Amino acid sequence: MKPKILFSHPLENTRHNFNGGCDSDCACSFSISVEKEEPPSLERLYASSCDGDCGGCDIGCDGDCSCDYGCDGDRGSLQFKHRLAGKILKQTTEHKYLIPFQDDQRAMLVANAKAPLFVLNAPAQEILDFFSQPRDPAEWSRASGIAYDDAQTAIAQFYELGLLREVSTQTALPAFVHTAAPLEAWLYLTRACNLVCAHCFVSKDVRRMSLETGLRAVERLFELAETHGHPEVKIKYAGGEPTMNWDLIPALHARAKSLAQATGLTLTEVLVTNATLLNRERLQFIKDEDFRLSISMDGFGEGHDRQRPVLNGNPTFERVLRTVLLALEMGLSPYLIITITRLNVDEVPALVAFALQHRLMLNLNFYRPHHPGDTLAADNTSLTRALREALRVIEANLPDYNFMEGLIDRSNFGAAHQHVCGAGRNYLSVDTDGSVLPCHMLTGYNLTGIPLDMLESPRFDDFANPPIDHRNGCNTCEWRYWCAGGCPIHAKNITGTSNVSSPYCSVYKAIYPELVRLQALQLLQADRNSQ
Image (tube, rainbow, N blue to C red; front, side):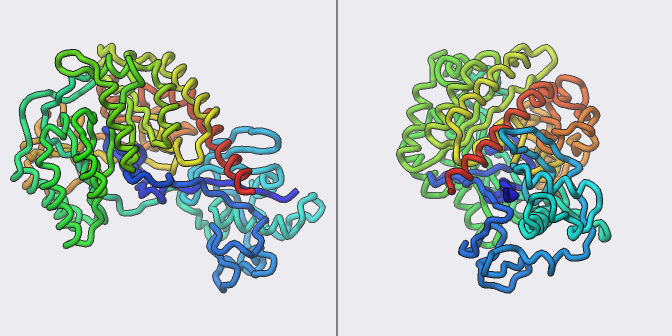
């Protein structure tokens, strides 16, 4: 049997900066296009089955080139001897999670900048395990039952994927991609809202951001991005309910678009909304101007209505559902967010089914209690049970797109990462008066921020958002580079310090193995469909 390696790429395809998360109510960087196009597909690689007629495979050869991957154009195999002959190689998978899988398969989650998730068949496992100690690839025995040339090709591909490194040079592939991150900002266009959501942390009042303040905020963001080397400015128009100050959105967008053209910086804009005040005209603007649309949908029926009524107590689910369906009809693909509490925890599976039916991305955002006595949160047992039911829905309707990488709260399985979010480093929250804090949750608590024009850097070094390797209770956990410890403000609200593991830690640990198993099933399904 030939060795076979299936793997998923990190989410750089979707412009992820490896901080974790989604385009929801967090200081994160996961971006999904608002256009209703095919979601990023799963990627895969066969360790020894290139047929020399790929037209440009994932490894990067076209079968007729002189690149250093060395495809010979006849057999399509990597010219291993020219690249790794005489080198001593060893596994670089110290940070990995392994699960036995079906038949002879093994799923492996690796803190690896090239690819996070692998599915290996038995021959591929045998080859990788051979390098648990430093070895010369030439030592591979022809008596193993795996053809020598097939083994050498697999070894070369393990090397290219970062699972094998040269011992002599100690040049291990970094587990984390340290690219220049975008500068992101949550703009409070208003503190007002037409809903009275049970979980909301924003102190509601009539304050609105003025045009002058909004324009200055946009200008300052581009100034800071240029000064501090951020290649992109990402603006989240939020609140309150930002559509209650709708006229400000086109004006700020026009200024941001002009500045992006003048500076050469990339511009990404997200509308974070409850969707009750969106109509066809506004959705057309969102589509025409290439906004991303993030819609709060807190369940699929009564649970949503319990959590998100209007001021007079009337329900809103049907109105939100109509807006989502209208957006889909218009060719938009909204990102859905549910904040899970005890009021709606039982509706998580139904919302997951709806998202899969319409090929939408979804974030299951765990409620972050405001203080230790807050009773709105679903208990961890109920939350775990609902999530397991949701995963069964996914398994029965296995998607062919990257649905699961950023599905669970602030976790991200698209790439290993040290921080759960960008707060304190590359993320800002701008209040209606222009004052700035490192996270919009702090602004929502009415803490005093720095005046916009006095802000010299997007960094808030006194904001406690430690890397996961420095968080107590997290720094030895096998899941740490995908969980990153959860929201630091949540931890501080409940325990008094940010430097501890999330109160939802037991939920993460219960769900992650099943999530990895489902992602492995996706890769196997993609493999079968490609044959």
